[in-house]
Length: 201
Length: 352
Image 1 (cartoon, each protein chain N blue to C red):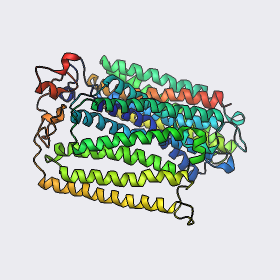
Image 2 (image 1 turned 30 degrees about the vertical axis):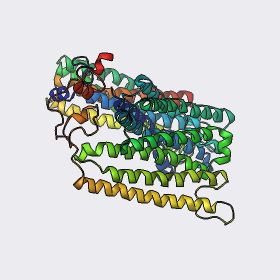
Image 3 (image 1 turned 90 degrees about the vertical axis):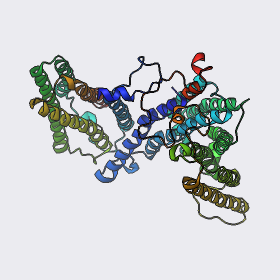
Image 4 (image 1 turned 120 degrees about the vertical axis):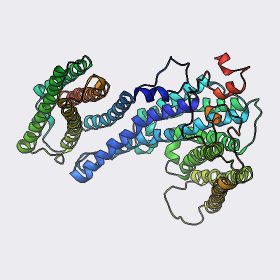
């Protein structure tokens, strides 16, 4: 891959002053920009419909702030960051441990979401079709949860390859791309958390 | 970076931010339709106007996504047939990027008749007029490129000149419609239909034709027939102006869009007849174009590497280009590398 990117470099500038960026990070940054626009629209819809539901339940009646699970998800950003550092310096066991912790913390977060949804549906009778709050809440939180799930699948695939001994320091570029995605998912949660649990109540 | 690259970079960046809101809105629509959601359900407090906002957040910048590559074609073709480098390169880049940004804040000018408050109306009227400024700068720069050049009226250049002329008028009716009270009168009329066809046909389609005539030789190795090309151009020009110039008038006279018939005696009959005849003339012109594409593929004159005496790298390789276009990376010192190669005594890089 290094070799092809060197050949493909169009020499618009004098040779040596410019290198073609790796396509992995560029692609992931593009995805993040595009996804940010999607989340923005959902956040706008959520804020626009705050307090516009014609019937209950309302956010202040039923929502509980998921502080513990939020801490889980946010600290998984730290563990994946350190996993990348360990991989670069060739500490394989430390890498696998941090990587597994990331998956564990992410899964814990998903468990928290599942618990919350179960409670909302079976104790408060709030579904996606109950009222505008239900529609916007499940869409926004669900869209984020879908991204966490997709991330967990990708992280698990890396874990399997890692346990098989196929992930080394030469893969750290690709691992970096994946952790970029994970950081994005965490950053989106900060926004969703603020909107749904702080502003929205 | 050549303007073609700059413009496509701008367009690609817009694609990322502009298409995805439509994706989001469609997800919401799916939630509404299949999961019983209420995003756009007015019975449950939802808002249909919100759908319009989300749609036009995509819908209007999309027009710029369509036309920015056409601006790129203009910036490549006009200099070659004016025998001059592009006029005002840095300003062109700045204008392009600012069109990219400003065009994302004009969407609700499609919604003046929805009944937004006066602040929203004023905001979107102002941003819409503002986007006319960088666009105007680009038109001036293309004219500046032609000014004092030795203009060759080959078919690609004819379509470029048609583009400049028609895109200017399309922009002017656009500025008229940007004024909210004017839009209240003419929204959903044939005036609007004429305006956006002026942009899409008179602007984008003319630019695409120019690009076809310009790069066909590079793609196929054969020249397109100049004789058929001129027939195509003049027939299409005639048909275009019969249809879309005249279409403004029934719009001003109050003819609404999206109707299939109307009572006689409203004064629209003759005008619409001319519009229809023009459409057939355009149809014939398109047939001439298609015939030209097909005939030239087999019978066209051999193009050689560089039929237009152009200055960009694609013309330095054979036509059609070899599977691997450059055996070794060409070292480039300016935005017109082939000019530098042809004129080692006076390369562009000397002035950069």
